[in-house]
View 1 (cartoon, helix red, strand yellow):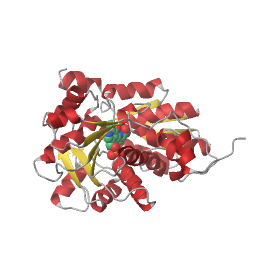
View 2: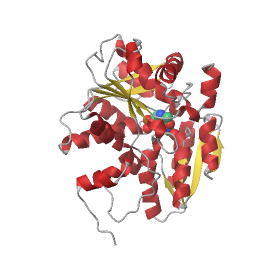
View 3: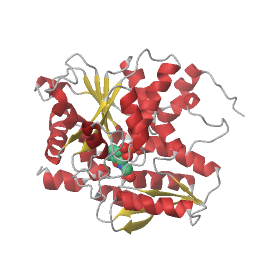
View 4: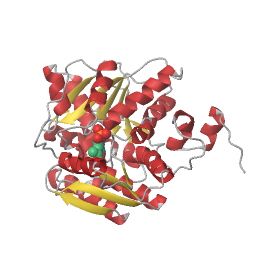
Length: 357
Ligand code: F0G
């Protein structure tokens, strides 16, 4: 049998992506990962955008999470979540989703030999994501209403015991956040330093909390000498956290009818709101919202000036950087990372319809 080696250097040399950081994931040593080699995504300097004066920060990078196996950052968390699900000998996994979580859960469940139930807001999921969930054999249920309705249904069924043998994998699941925190590790390793600002699209608010956790761990373990400021970005008509921030409130201003072209973050009641608020507060960052016009402009600019194809929920990071540029909140000398959460292919309608490519 292969001897287990706990040394950091050897672990790094042998492993790729999320599992390269296994020693920083609080998992039992005997767990066998359910993996598709997720993580290890490109960190791309967007120099053309600076040269064309689209942004005024010369040191700006895009962390392109669309390069994950199912095309979004969800794979980082799903590899860990499904590994745990498999170890618990459940029948399957269950998620509510705006699409990417469903696609990712379906793929990893397939790999693990588990059933996958997904609950989606009817008409609210981009076609590429729905197609992926079906391709990987998920059992799909559509509900009238929003993502928030779908999540409520999943929570009620799980809590009510109707789905005892199904493991819930929405982003309140701590294992998913453990996997997603590895984005911070990759950014610091690749840049060789901690960025000044990290801009993250916010929907259910799990990812920004996870990434902040990653940076804090690096700092507390002595791998980093400072912490970044976290900027949470929402779409204007789906902005419970950005709105609260603007009003100086400590609690979100929930939205019953969230609306935006960025369907992935069309969420009015983010379940992880308190963790996300803490992340932004602790890091001395801020929340900001951008409108659909800015989102589509940013999507077009990334695609045409830099060759990076992202879905609308991902271009909000660039849109936010542009919006705050004039206000001096992020300065010329700052090292900036824009998290681009999902691939353009996820949402063909956004590419062909509104963008008029
Ligand atoms: N960007 C994309 C492309 C997403 O799919 C999501 C969330 C987010 C950003 C926001 O991340 O929820 O952790 O704040 N999508 C979930 C889903 C809700 O069901 O796929 P968050």
